[in-house]
Length: 415
Image (tube, rainbow, N blue to C red; front, side, top):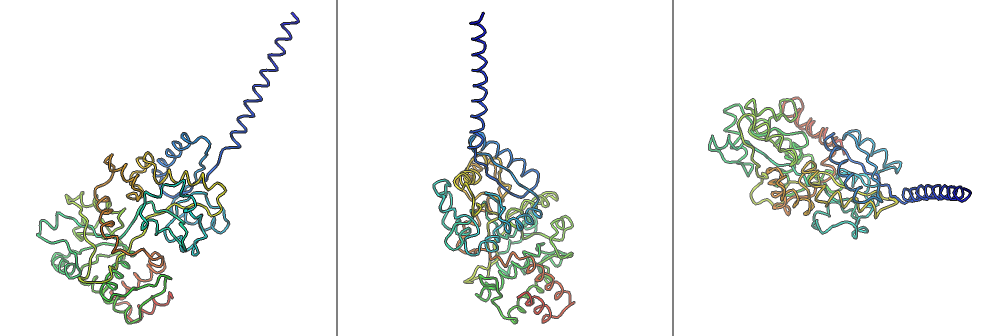
């Protein structure tokens, strides 16, 4: 009997010890787990597949815990502006291209990803791709996808009327002349792309940049006046349709437009509108001046990923960043939600599984084919104050509300 009691007592001690050992081991495991914060912006659909991708990554990397932080674009931008001041950024973050100039003008605002090349498969990118995220020799960010303003048209309209899709400014005005007889216009486009269109024409025509790399005006008031005259001409001659001073894709249903100028990742919006009236969307060409030495068109990353400059676990952050950019399973979850991926590995996954919209892929190919002739976007071209002031003064001048000199002066005051 005493022997049995001793055995029971001994077993109790063993059980207690084992419980303590399991709890202790669990505690050690938790303490050894690296926690990486990851922030992005987007809608509920984006959050859903991203969270699913995080779960997959964590299941394959049990020693890493990803803490998600996401919001709508406007709130995300506001939160990031504050977090950059306080240093409370996420370890891995989605950023806008222009934030490099804003938050890292010397290349020290983000971690130098070049130092983490053992953990990120940079061979999936060309040197040119990575140059967009390089500041002062430091790789601050990696592009997820590229974006440029590109014309898109209703192919059926052109075929029905035996019209040629324009490639030059003269052809563009010739098309507008035909459309004017039908009280139609060529393009609807946003205020941002009105500025881009003006820059393209001027730089091609005069072989001179509108802005310096530092965001200053590089032209005289007289030259700026020529730009305003040209934009007035585009409005008067039915090239630009802007009844409400903004883009209106639904105007194709009202038989007011035959095309639009959009970001590459927006062309499916026009395609849907064209389909609704029995049309068929097709990409156009970058409008050019024959023999021009400047292309006048610009390219930017649609968005990018960066690592916090003082990240405590940069190698772990790099491992997760590599997953976001180059893991084919995550690419199949994301599809082309953030644009056609730059990463060759992710792009291959979408191609092999027929997950790319044909027009977006065509846009990517057009970008790659013209890469040498398209300039890197300047931050000043993305400045909302510059975009708004240019469009407002163009419209006011075209409508006769202000003189050309007043429009030029009002815009120039930004500098």
